[in-house]
Length: 267
Image (tube, rainbow, N blue to C red; front, side, top):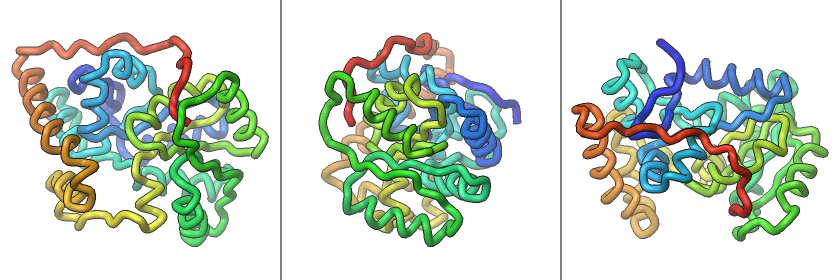
């Protein structure tokens, strides 16, 4: 497996697997390096395709994993990546947390709601008895105020955390991760629906649906009002652009990685 970033519709996605991604994240934690990570499915890629500024933010991430099977297929189709599996955010989260527990790296949970976090913390502690949860902070569901990013960073650093898990939903969590990376000396993982899954609030689809990229259909059935646009409009757009890129009808040139600080963002 040749590693590195490859363009999927202009969004740079890493050719990686669970072991490689986990190793890279844990290394950054030990070395106290700011390290931005996200796992992108079709919806995550399309947020970049439809917003050039967000695409540039995504392209500045240290690690972007192919969260959905269609993103893995794109890497294989466009770039002969030879990936046999996706790197699904909720599963990557558990692998990182397992390593963090084993290696004494405290974890900080940021995002979601108080009730979800109240279920998530004991669930993680039951799975990983050695886990040290340094801090827990629910989303405020509003935009940041002047000076607030520095205050959030100070709380996280003062807790002794070495890994930050961010569960704010796509694309808010990616903007938060991009904005907070300069303030923190640790990996920041935008983990999507991992908080809800591991808190027991969302059920994973059967393995056969995951294997054949039908997870979208499962989630659409669970949350039709919230997710209909994501799947019924964005999925066909994704496939159309994918085949245009493969056929050479569209260059899908990745924008340069963003470097400008984020003024305000969802916290």
